[in-house]
Image 1 (cartoon, rainbow, N blue to C red):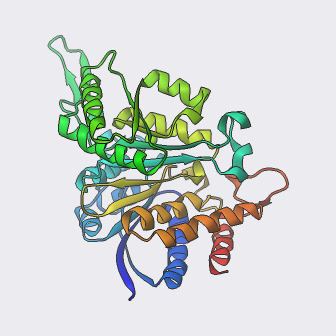
Image 2 (image 1 turned 180 degrees about the vertical axis):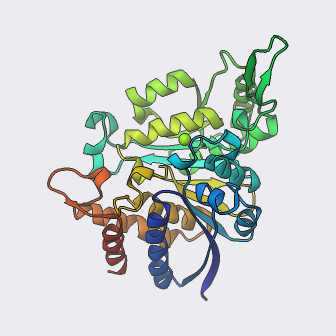
Length: 361
Ligand code: IPM
Ligand code: MG
């Protein structure tokens, strides 16, 4: 029987429209092969939504997302909206989407692709074989804690405030996702905090440690965030699954991504307890190359594969996409961001076409 899924597409800004259209074509081809029918509906978010409605996340866009089986997002942001205050910027749309769909768990894999190992700025022997999954808490911590704002003190001086907060239930629900993720991988979990300084981190460490009793097959370790940043560059292969809060996860997931040398290749999944997940590339909207057919569509395509695997339970279709991506890289096809000598340089559309050919074979 044909499986049917409603997918909301959020192209956002910059290169978003170009890369998401490749992902849609890929999904259509894969759908035919695996008897899956996708019903796509598009909605504005980010700068595009600000221009259209004045809001970075119009209620109508959020409703469309809520009423779908999964959300495929490209990226938001651009120079045009850079001078707006934080709450009005395109990025606020992204944060609103995460909060609105209660997407508390963000999975960010950073896996070395052997064909692209030369793209890493680190030595081959350091990064070869790296396969890390960062599990980042996404709807709490300092991103959402209150009080927040810029206030004027009695002396007339302005004071900026954000608050890092975690309740035990927030720690435990992301902890469970992390332990379960580690269980499915090599069984090693490293929890990253700053419990030598922060009370919120002490509570984090206490709860994660307690939770470990329920997952005897997982080997848990703890690391301070400054050391974790250093260890990621010094000896990244010591890590398998990392679990951490919102801000530390933001920073460490970029560092982990860069180990692979090509942020243009990395997908991510944001999941809640129930309801649709959001699947998006780790990279941004790249306004400098938007509309020039230069973008690498592969992180978006691999995000669609994550959507199939984690959001729609279609792992055979996900495998097929991932294998086809490897295949075109083995054929020496490259976009500008991952180009090296002797390889064949393609634009966004041509890379997509090559991938579709590989998928159909
Ligand atoms: C990310 C981004 C976002 C974040 C920004 C764009 C709000 O950096 O997804 O990592 O900080 O979470
Ligand atoms: Mg980030």
